[in-house]
Image (cartoon, rainbow, N blue to C red):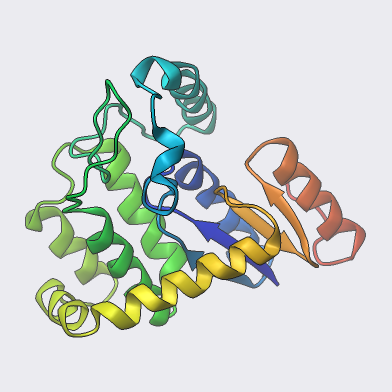
Length: 215
């Protein structure tokens, strides 16, 4: 079994999802999908004095990776799941989106559809303007056999429970030894990021006879 720690604001989390779904659906590897809040919520101080110019190399990198993977990705995303001053890096105290989508994701994880839902919702977030509108979210939930209004009502009534479940994931992530996402954990060894770390994970799975290859 692999623990996958995922954030709904991380482009790299989004970009690794097709490969993780391939491990699950093609190679029958059990993926324990664990949502965490973005670093902007867990460690807002990390962003202090880091403006948009600091992130330009990262933006270029994940745009390049998206193109290589043939995955849609448009930046800047609108609305950004995290409200943040791009000139100062300061994270806003008012966050109207991230808790909602994270709790939607946790709800779907509890229904056994977490990683599949995360891929579809993340594709909206990273490719469609105004991804948060009901006319886009409602058919997405319908696709997974859920009603948007009923999901929102459940989240409203169980907000603290869902938040606590995510916080437990975050504690597990700390114990695994790293705070970043995407983070895969296999046999108490973590693999942070994509490319080389993912290839190392695949090599371990092959060595252990879990999969034969990843072609």
